Image (tube, rainbow, N blue to C red; front, side, top):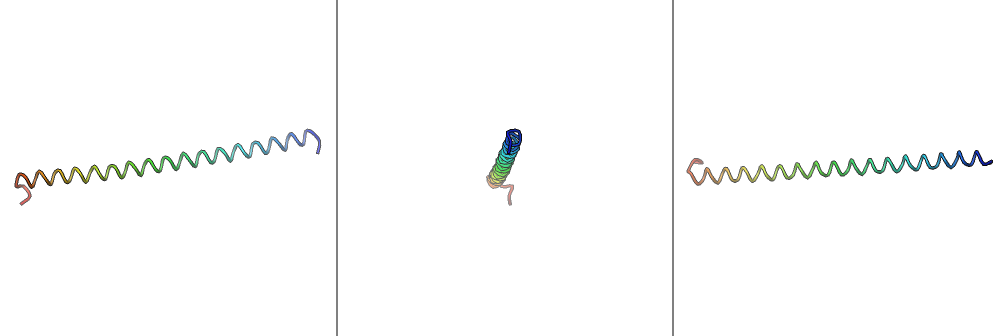
Length: 66
């Protein structure tokens, strides 16, 4: 293999490695976004449950639940 072929081969290898690294970073970003979404959904559900509990407590205290 002459120098130009070797340089071309090395450039191809570097390009492939860069693409793979980019793909891995995109996968990590997607996983982080999904995790954040799930956390926010869980937090929202907890807040909704607390609000419902508070509303029920007010109804019970004021006799509106009967």
